[in-house]
Image (cartoon, rainbow, N blue to C red; front, side):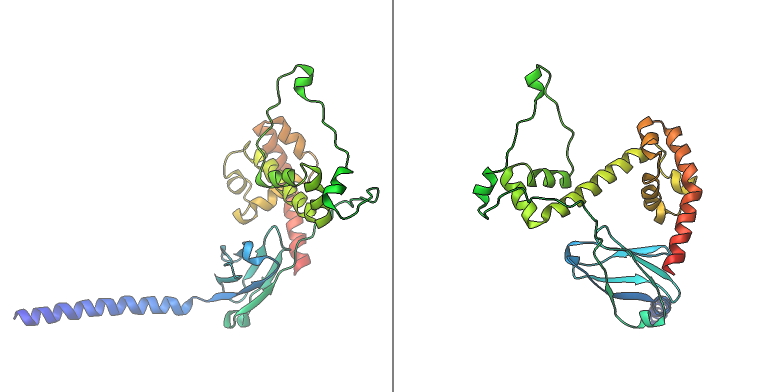
Length: 266
C-alpha cells in the first residue's frame, strides 16, 4: 500500500514538472529576438542605447559590440549615443532570422578654425613653448579681496583645463588635434549641467505625467527646449511656475518637430 502511494506521489510530481517545462517551451518559442553586432569607432569603450520604440524595451551593446533585443517584424528600433549619429531601423523577418551587422557613423561637431600661423615653430616642444607669452591675471588678493572659491569641475572640464593649463600641454594638445574632442566633451557636460539645473525646478515625472510625453523622449524634449529662445531666461528666474509655463508653451512645437523628424527618416 505504501509503495503504491509513493508511485502516485512521484507520478504527480513528474506531471507537474512536465507541465512547467511545456509552458516554458511554448513561451520560449514565441519570443523573437533581434540580434547582431555594432561596428563603429571605439565601440569597445562606448555604450550605445538600443531601444525598441514599439514595445518600449531597450538594451546596450557589449564591449565587442554585440546586442540582443526582443522584437518582431514591423517594430522600429533606434540606436543612439552621444558619439555616433542616430540610426533607425524597421525590423523585418530577415532581421529576426540572421545575425545582423550595424555600422554607426561618428557624430561630427564643427568647431571654429584655430590659426597658429603667427607662431614660428621648430618642432622642439620645449623651445617652442618658451615662445608663447603667458601673463598672470589680476587676482582677488591683489585688490585685498577674499580669494575666489571656484565651483567643482566636471571630469570633462578637468581634462580640458589640464590639457590647456600650461604652454607645453597647450601646444601638444593643439598640434595633436585632441583639443577638438576635449572641447566637445566639455560643451556636452556644460549642456547636461544646464538642463539638470532647469529640471530641478519642476516636480519629478512632470513631463510624462502632466505633459504626456513618452518617457523615452523626455531627454529629447529637454534638449529641444534648451535650444529655444526664452529657455535661459526661464531657468535664471529660478521659479518653478515660470519654467512650467515655458515648457507648456513649447509642447506643441515639439510635437510638430518630432512628426517632421519621423517623416524625414521614413
